[in-house]
Image 1 (cartoon, rainbow, N blue to C red):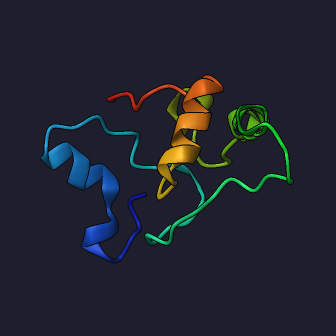
Image 2: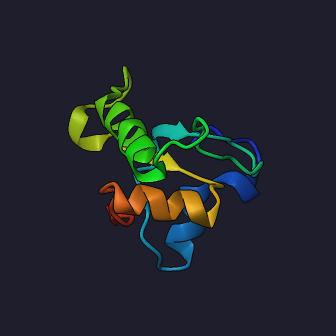
Amino acid sequence: MTDEPTPDLRWHDLLAARGLPTPEPGGLLIGQRRGYLAHLLTGEGADRTEAAAAVLDAVRALRSPLHEESKIARVAMYLTTEDVEALRAAGCGPPRSR
């Protein structure tokens, strides 16, 4: 995100300044923008990994009208450890540097 008016929320810049993997500065943010904790919503008794896989499939299918396919960063932030573990088990990979 390059248009964020709050410097503390310009994640691309913050991660790059620390030598950490950085997604493209523009892309699709999945979940909350400003640090509110997000959760994968599942039905009672649902398998969390299966639910995460369905979310992951939907996210991978998203397209941006502003970026070509190879430049689309799809980033989820502010998830619980349990949800990140479910997404990883469903095939979500670690961040990649530009």
